[in-house]
Image 1 (cartoon, helix red, strand yellow):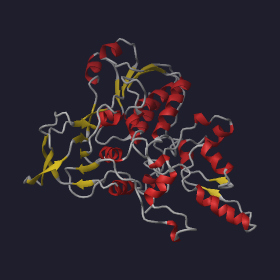
Image 2 (cartoon, helix red, strand yellow; image 1 turned 45 degrees about the horizontal axis):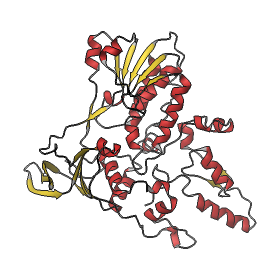
Image 3 (cartoon, helix red, strand yellow; image 1 turned 90 degrees about the vertical axis):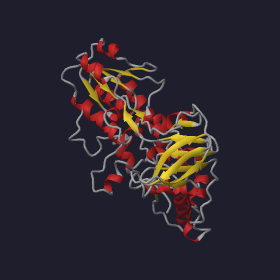
Image 4 (cartoon, one colour; image 1 turned 180 degrees about the horizontal axis):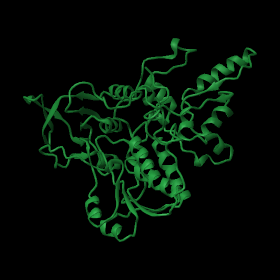
Length: 426
């Protein structure tokens, strides 16, 4: 199995196929127009495909869910205003295979244009949005687009929240496009952005806001493992931000979506994502030229992992059950190719300088050591809503959105949709 349209696939990854076909057709005197498709998500990529002789026209589908004005904006020379498809599949293809309405993670109004309507506000009000992650960005720009005055407070020095971590995962570089687009929308809609500004309850209560939207995200759940205070134990945030380095043998505690991402990050050399290198990606997945190899498939030759990684989970059974319907198999295959060991049904007994001790089952049998020099904690999240109680006590209207509302699974699809929907009704 070879991925063809997921976000980990390089842009225009199969244009070389149509280029060969087109050349052969033309050599035979056949002038039939040929279309290229798959992972063509910006006007620049489309132009490169056409200018390079790879096709006569390009076929787009998901990019038009992300931004129905893709063609109009490109024609007007406003490519930078296009809301780029990040090929996540979470709200389009995953929904389709579940017999649900196909929409879009970065554009929740797709297929809901008549039900999720953004009308001009009859009365201009003042709102504060705390947190510039996906939910906060969606809420702030939607409120401002409707005519409200919006002030957005973000404790970090940049917008993005969890997306600033996600874009560092090999194969998820496209996530930076969503932050680029939100940056454009913040400026275009006049949102007043306060970066590196932790919001406090007294400050917000004194701000004269009609309401405060808390999009403060999540905090890491405490797994309560004896020894987790040792210096070689990191949170996934510390790892992905580069606060502390990982060693050569790593145990990852927790195998949800974040655990899978962290494992992929750990086994890939910095700056060597196959998604950004078509030649490397083809070797990684065994994609060959059918003119040279029958079927165009050869044995995969992935780059060797830079670390030895063990991925663990408390639950037994299949790993990655919460991953996307159309992308979960890609994540599992990627880690398998990199030699990541997956161990389920474990109890985390204790962490020592030698590694992580685990046992199995309710009887806590077969205790053993997972030897490692680094332990990364990805054991879930809790809503971060410490501002809610003091604001409510001060008589301020408060709305929770995104991870601050529910953090069972970090879900950008739900966060952006919820931020947009809440802002559309205020």
